[in-house]
Length: 195
Ligand code: SF4
Image 1: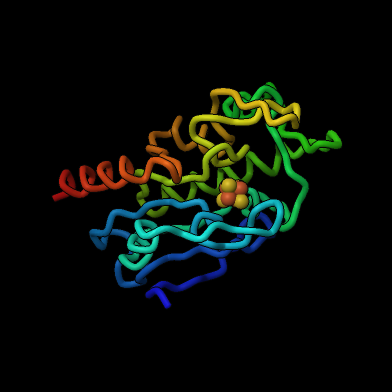
Image 2 (image 1 turned 180 degrees about the vertical axis):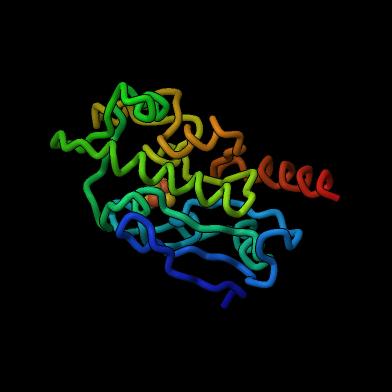
């Protein structure tokens, strides 16, 4: 059992589970916090009801009380499981601007829920002073470099998911689960700057 605690956090009628780490190391306590996609910490919040087994680094960060787990899609009010979704054209920033939509294969428009989830992630980062995140690659919410193009044919384009786009725009440095060495170096740099 890792020394973490899970609390329910009310947002928009949904109750995503947040891992707030050691409560005694809260805001101002000196530990650099990292926002992490909840599915990367093993929470079964993906569209298909699955999660991913966290690797050594994320487990260590969790044990150090650094991780703040959030699923933006769940925070935005979407259920688990849910239909897979893609961004038309693959650009989360265009969804934020109202220029394009997040859709399911059957054409349902989930844009509002995705934007609510992105805003929840940003609010959490601001509240907790989070300066970096590790988010799931290629997700229409969390992807930081690539996204699917909205055709549901497996075509990837360069672009961010909706949450990643908002966090990056607001100055949060976003890594994915394949960039953990870079993420750790960045974290060490932040901590050395913070003294
Ligand atoms: S990739 Fe992001 S939105 Fe998708 S299940 Fe994981 S945390 Fe939730």
